[in-house]
Image 1 (cartoon, rainbow, N blue to C red):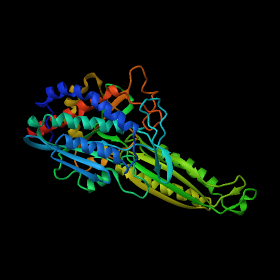
Image 2: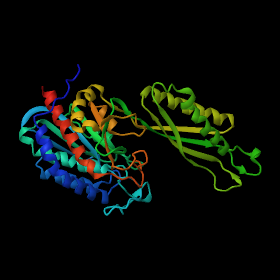
Image 3: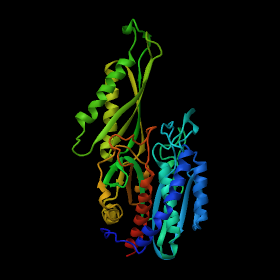
Length: 421
């Protein structure tokens, strides 16, 4: 049954009147978090700040240690109604910051056994600060709030360290969407691909699935001057890489959905005159359809093994599914479109599919979800030329954060009252 189009909630005017007073605090939180980023499953300081803030607001429940460092806060409105969840991710990336800011990160950390620079190169500091602001705004409106809002502060969206579990999947397993169970979940992501003041949305498949690909070609080591005495895994690996380019371009119907197969790392050999025993390739697979996803996995495996066999080499293919497709529930998206139009005005835009991935997708597999994009590229900068998310030069215009606070607050309240009706 279609959900009725969301109408402005009874709190709409209060949200817009009170949100600007929080802007300075949101920016201050963001700067502090930006200066002190933490890697996945290690967000101890960040989680402590979030939990203390939620407790100060007098939320009905604050759970910590969910999926290692996650925080879940529950705000029950004074009026009866349904439940909605809002999510922000907390982790930084193993990236050394190159942006000249007074609050630039100088942090260092350990990532998979290596000492690295740490930076909020994907804007999760913005997400946390925005949701802290939304929690304060709605807590102040508790007397008029219908229903319940669950605030989910999630660790390890950028993947946990090797050998560890974490992220949205683990939060769900540990009850983040239970007691109470939401009827919908909303989230956002800042992006340099859109200008400040703009909100992007898309119904249906929005962000790609993400799969880790590892191919090991086994040859037989020999002197580089006598390749006929061995089996060359380097030449074989080169043929495999070239062959993989045909999986998408020649065997997949791209009129249905786009797809990407990329090899990002090749390791093999130690000297210029020694043909090694083996070569390892690592890459990623991105799709927007689960059926196509499985088909590509089969084609990649078959091609790599067949090419290797033709060169008398052995081959092992390992494909690990990371994140599913981020699918914005079409019914929920259509119903909440009036809210986004009211909040963003002329800044609302339908965006193309994004080949990046998001583990918000795991939440969407449990309850209907809507994930939107918040522009943070300042005026005068071409978003096409701005440093992308994950770049050491990624820059977020803090003037865009207030729009994020308003968007999540309005989405939550409009949904609660529309669903109530």
